[in-house]
Length: 311
Image (cartoon, rainbow, N blue to C red; front, side, top):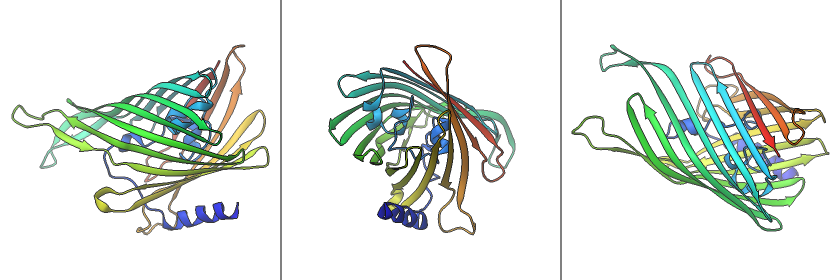
């Protein structure tokens, strides 16, 4: 336990920021529970959203699971996510999911700062996922994503893939590794009739996660992400805590805002959330999750809600 806590502290000290590269619209979150825990739960079963968190978690799926999120956020931003998962006996699961993030009413500017009107942008993908337990303490999974992006009248299509592993050391200690975009790129359509297509590559992000259970009603999560764009070593730390109060769950999360080379005295974004089960339909276990995103740089508060169903 001490070694894990020490590793988390060292990770915080040396962490750096991952922003500024292609695919940033896909890295926000897909569900309120995950965001309220600092987007750190790659090692924990996440009802309705396992394929997004870590495809290796799909072996834990229960019969039929459905997850749905619709975030109306500040600054005309929005996120939609939907996932349907089926358990595959004896110890596997498969999922079909959709994700979209977008920004509306962006004010366009020309080369001399003249107004060019408003436009919208979005990043989306359709994802097929599979995960299975291959040993008593080891499971793996993968995602295959078909990407659809747009900016105003210009479109891009491409493919990318994720790979994940889960190491179940005990019920109280689970480790994980996820390689997001271990392959991935998309091509933008020609801007003019004489110009060619423009290709963007997605940076691979390696994430190492841990879940530590304390008592029967408390869990701690941590995730360290790494990528190497243009031979620059960049890191980011995210962490969260979850407290189960039987009828409801309380959550607290923190995620790194910027790199270590900045003048901020406090370099983390704080997130709060809660979850509860709703008894409406006899044959379905329905869960409502909420997260409040306080934003940064005066972007405003965003209220995030997710629903998930188990049959």
